[in-house]
Length: 419
Image (cartoon, rainbow, N blue to C red):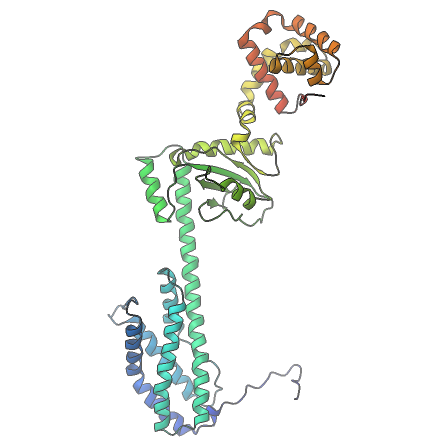
């Protein structure tokens, strides 16, 4: 076998159809073109008989678009056959109608299987008619076999056009669903609703086929990278990746297995998921998730996972009202201004340990990792600095709030009991 010469285009194999005398080809084409309308009607009748539930679509003149498409396909194929000086490669397909067929299947929520079966039926019926015409004008059998091959090549072209239309419909539906999903999320996350929020939410949820749950939780995500792919959180979770910090609405967040599924889907992401609330109060869950993310960005909460706000309530309660806590600290910790920074921190840690445990010197010493005598010395100093003020329950509560907040910020040591 000779090898192709580099740089030289291969010459298409000559078809037996091209060897048919020109006059015979013209006679075949003339008869086939004249019978194209009747052939189209025959094909459509068989399709209707085989697929009676197939939707009927009419054009502006009231003619069946299916009949128009079949007729145009037959005529285009015959015109191609008439050009006997050309190869028998796939002829040009009338794309508009067949793209519409595919688009219609996509918009109707059907697969392309039925459409492809109909196309194969049409090719088979057309071949029977062309075979009869070929016998009438005495087309040689090898040429007719070449015509069969060309017919199935043509079928591939029809399918390709329908697949394009189907893909366009799928993309349009996905885009429309995404738009409606964003509108639903906007309504869920606004603080004040006009009219009946439950009715409005139910209507918008129904438009995207999202069953309105009894409870939702809102998540705010931090992208691991600018071009990060959307996490595979599942169809039931509403996800908006268009925000700088992507948002998600989790239905029935307390359902069995939901947290584990989210944990796997969000591996590599950071952020926070707010508490579980009724759908009309989703904005409240969002508010807590946003607050948690701000603390994550400041390094005050874990930054390598999507955390749940309900597991970090103390930090969210004490670190959010920063100005109020700082103002309270100026008042509660004023006595420590008389001490140096290092000693003042040790006294503050001792006060917090005492407030949290109400224990004696040995217990506090174990917690702080120092000698009991050191604790007794510090407690005497604390009594001297705060006096009777520290015996007031309300003052003690305020002092504990301030010191817990400072510990969460890393300004005090994380006290742990020592063996």
